Image 1 (cartoon, rainbow, N blue to C red):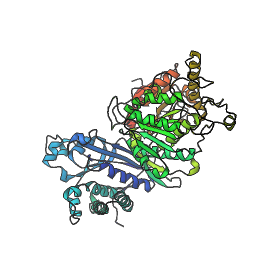
Image 2: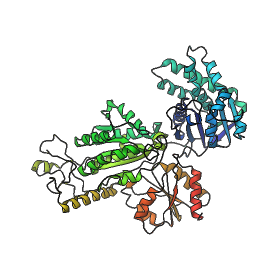
Image 3: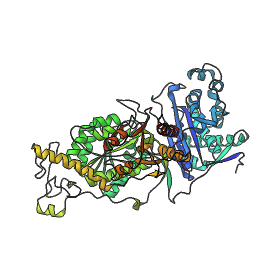
Image 4: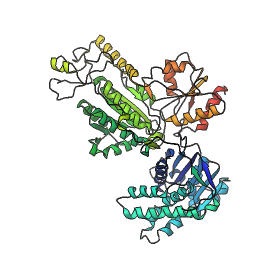
Length: 617
């Protein structure tokens, strides 16, 4: 075992990998995250993709970043990083603002040539002086060391340079005492079909690790503490993958075959990719010709008795709106996954926002109530995807799942659940007595839940038709009667409202006796939870509540909020959820913290925002 010197013990540490979009920063970050999760660390990641598919090499607009926080009590990727890896001058220039005071910078000094400096629009020949850097800089000849490690590999120069990220990863593994064997196993699996590439990367990661040992006198190394996790099998998982797996579990628990009708759109496409791999589990994932075909195919699959899902992002949700309305009036179970991105129109495809809330709640013609839920973290995407399916099937309604790019692309450490951690999903089938009596009609309902009974086409005695035209509440025949239409509208509305009887109550964290409650919804959970903790530590009593069920709200939600003098809603839009709550709490003055920059909150922004509101600034 190589000896470590100058070892610092930390509860958590934040590392930011940055370089050109072709430099493999996401891969290096993902391996570091996976290895850290494997040793028991909590992890939270923020992949920060450039907006352009492939900007000019070395340019400022082509910089790709991956930030990860690992350790104990980790709920966010961190506001700033302890260590910044910059593979070229552009990456350094774009990411230096994310470095903590006293942090460490690791650069590939081979990439700081005069030509590279000009591409990144420097005006002097010294990037560190020009940027006013006073932090410790570790100038590592990453490119030349990678070439030396692979000098006898027979690989061409282009292929050799693709391994630079793995050399940097090896050095980071040394700094943070990560087990190299775990990283090597990841590389073997990643390049299982290309053993020569796997061998080359393993050789390079060892070279980077050994380089770290050889220069140990110039920089501290770190040991990161871990929580005592619940026994089980852990892995890191991103939100989109977790969503796909949650759908698969719901299929197993409901006994319904899973169907996904989808059209590729950033940042939701990975859900389609993941489900397309699962033919072995009976999943039918079909890439349709457009968003409208995606939702319509899912509606057809639902009518045929499948667990039907369609996935998209904001612009696609707009295109699916009429189809969702058809599912509302037909009262068919349908899960619509919206991984939100910056808008409007094409907007910012690789960036995150929470700006589709009003569209999810109201963006259809006529009275079209649907259930709306929102996962709070990458791992919660698994739970809430399952919940969306459960509610859709058991309550015969469309459910919109509002994920976002931050948690969809981000990853956390996840314990693979046991089979009995999740309940059975029970479709509301036509009761046997109605089947046998021949009295069943398509819009007959359970008297308590108002959920109509679900008949699978082809079942003897249950021949029926559904459609987009209004139906008579009793006979289920097409009806244009005004009174009947009003009755059906009110029934569909009440059916969704009664879902509140079947979801958890709102929980409050932090100082529950405080006068102030910080409120959020969906993927801002980690930042707001951490902010509430910091506010309480600073002597600003603050309660905290995060909404995962939005329509309907938990039954106790409004009573809980009424108990606080100050209600502050923080969200990544101009105040949509605050407006929604304000309409339900007319006597309250709901205050707002908003950000619409395509980036997640910084904890410091939320803390400052709460203080400013309380100080009437």
